[in-house]
Length: 162
Image (cartoon, rainbow, N blue to C red; front, side, top):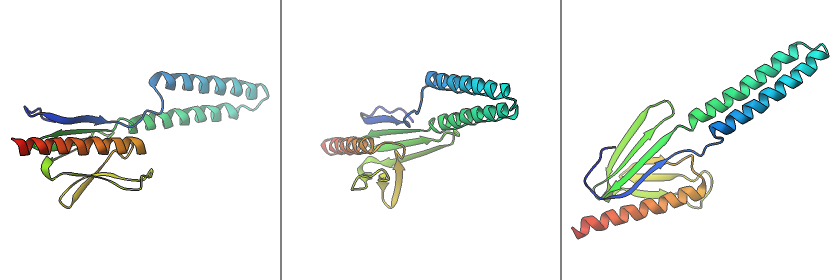
């Protein structure tokens, strides 16, 4: 997002919660590999040769599932509020970006009540709305909504006192 000389009232990067760190992933995969190998050797000693391949496929499936999960967790949403604009940039896991800039004076923050896991946090401008923070927990969404409302209010005060 472009840098400005304006006062920044809110500047945040939203990221999904990590299911496991890289170190934790290495530990889990080491345990899965060890258990698969030891169990596969036990079955091999009993003459069940094909079982080793299935344990290998299980370990591969677990590895692929974690990699897919880590890729989805690379999603980012950048939000910045200044006196003149509310700027958003959403970067998907595949690198695709979507930028939005709306006048801060006309931006509204709406959080669906009552708060439930499927309650949406929206930034609205006119008849257009952008849903943000789908991956956040309910308390995180509520906290973000309050912080954004506060930042937009302070931005509005700057415009009216200048």
